[in-house]
Length: 326
Image 1 (cartoon, rainbow, N blue to C red):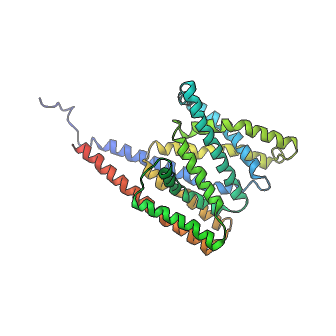
Image 2: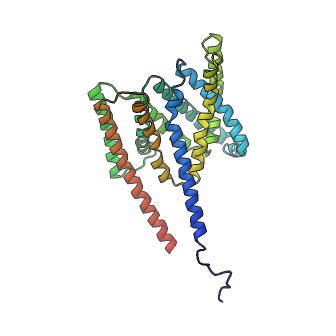
Image 3: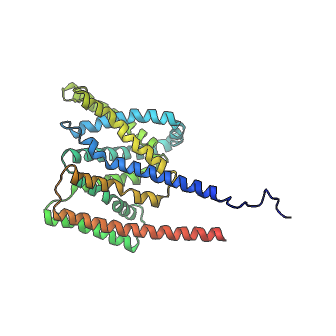
């Protein structure tokens, strides 16, 4: 039986779908660039808290992030998704345990990052986020028993060589870089165990940290050490820190809906790159040749890691096309 004219594919009928797909990809790239550019510019924001201890900035950030996330999650209608993420008492308790671990890791990561900015160590923060993908590979090997490819092993070796080189030449470990990379990598590993999106997950995490933050804020206020309310500029910055924390997550959520993980993986290097440039050009941090050599080894390692990821992506794409052709 022949197809009717309406059933036959019309010339150019596929084009609107292709155009829509390309448009969605362009939008996704735009969202991704926005998210990582905002994260990369965080040193500019946190450098404004001059004279405010990093610990106080941290507890204010947790407080105002939680409050702003409540508004965002309500407007986006995500409460049902959060409730569904904790089915049954036993499973809910288990997942809350994982979330609490995530909350403590992200609090340590945030606090150390703020400390790095306030003590003019943005280069170390940048190095930490350059190292994060390689830490993720190491955690996958050690915790998840994942097998590493040849290029990934070489990348890991270069990262280890970079840290050892700085220890030998400068006599110090880049401890801020290492802790930032390890806390963020471990955070990502734990978050995989809880089926919540980034916004909803961060709301639950900051909610768990909120009692501690309020207690710390009360202690600072009682002893006259709180900077909140002391000046309009500082108070406004503390309140805005919640918005500054949430906006990149909104953009990131838009990117993850439209892009493959491999594309997002390449975009993520924008964040530490911007931090690196800000450290040199805006904050005027010195870059000694041993530090530059450390960065160079990490960059080469990331190049090998990205090459391996790209090859796996190409192979997976080829297999997918072969299945479709069959």
